[in-house]
Length: 296
Image 1 (tube, rainbow, N blue to C red):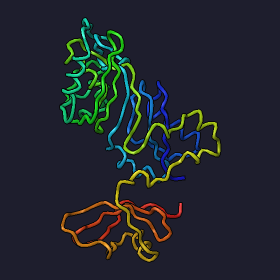
Image 2: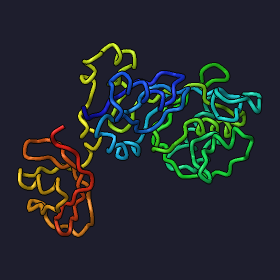
Image 3: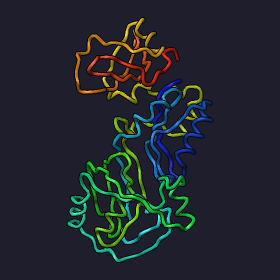
Image 4: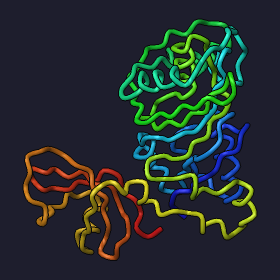
């Protein structure tokens, strides 16, 4: 039972809550998520099951697509609807203003994370410090906004759709757009639609997973889907055994290339996904990086 489980996270649950619920449903402890969603957010949450938990690092860095809604004229201390309103301003925003905002928040931008975030400051989460009344000193960081769509809904609400790099806070994006518009804003709804190659269309609701009972594995995706962007290589039976024991393998089919090191998906002679390997391209030598059991 190793693989990826795509869950449509409901509103009001933390990502950890979802992991705990799935552990009970499938009766397995080895369950982890690849990228959190705030409790008020819904949508695609990728869970790694069994040995796939060792591959989560390759999923977390993928670009994400979200839809959401922001309320103009109000700032909150969390930059979303779960916080306290700290300022209200009049709203006078039109379509031209949104076009300018879309142009301004395009490409690589500098973003200040929310005060209420999970970033660690001196070993403590920023949101814990903020809740205790401390002013949190955070550092702005570059994020990439690949696409951004903004549409005015009524006089004081904006619907958005954004594709952005990992590490982007959409509620901080809503906050900053509100500042540019001169009225302030906070995020009132957020739904993750896509993460890398994975889509919400293929996700299952927790209730449906529960109802599936012992048939839940039909929702499981092969764990090599987590690294399908890597080139693959296949080893014969002898080389597979040596590789699983930690030995380097020379790939005769790989031409020497002085470019450096590259990651490879590694399969055995029977086509089973057994490891992530690191290829020394100059010597055409493959070393084990993450060894997985080919028999489970």
